[in-house]
Image (cartoon, rainbow, N blue to C red; front, side):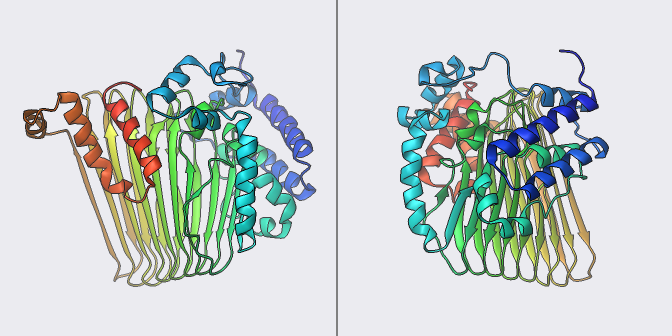
Length: 445
């Protein structure tokens, strides 16, 4: 394919803006935001260490993988390797249809919408982003793209211009949702989008657990995926966000997440990256008010020649605010995994801790960790720890002496290493996660 110029890319983006505006029947104020993204795209910096500017322009010009079926009408239309993977995971035919985005989603969507309609009366609102833009314009104007600027980078500008799909989640003050919200039903269609946008608003003293993804993105056709999440966690709210990623190896992912955590609020964000795609680069940012708490947990499975660079910046702005940035990585084959953490103490009696543990299973794999602690006050407590090592021969010997094969013993050690961070994940997902780990360790992915 010939080189794509910046001018040609802008023309393609402009056409996509018009297509989205017309298809979504979106209000004029949202289309204006898109054009601000287009204006910023030309001058915004591009500093991605993996995707060059020329490659980004090619993605924009032709974002789909050659050879991928244009229309998937039955499970038989899936690429053979995808169908084989779903079978090996033991996923039922019904769930495989959900994952593939087949017609069955309509029936399920109706049932799920009826369920949500009952909870909407109590103050739980879950809507596709395109619908929320039209139904709640005042709320959206106050929150959409308030934590990001299209001028930050070409990727942020591109997302601003062509975002499509995503979820709006609003929880009314005082509402406590007693069950995890599994939103892969609703984002199923959006999972095929290139740039879904997610807004979470937890009003004061609310409680809920949101789970995104699972294997839903396994059939994403785009080579570049730019999702953006903005979370507003008000005073006293208790929110858990669990993101389960299983991207195919031809996708570059650039998740962008930012959150504001109010006074006495608590936000726990756990990302399980079992399939990180060709490359996965993220640097979420959190601003924490008085006595607020944020916890960022990352589980990373590095395979093949994948490149993973995961950061996390926390700004402890209120008195006695606290933050933890913890990651566990299993690095195999010729993969590269980099973990970064930065905690900035800006108020008295704040506490922060960064930890990174890695299990390196190949001499060709690379692991790097870069903790950063900054204190602007004299009574903050900030600390970090890192441990990078291999499986101990004596551990393998002990388990094999008990009758396990070397493969089964290795799987057991890896699962035991990762298990502490999986404690809050529902059992149906935990079973699938363990199977994926087993397959990766045995080279079956």
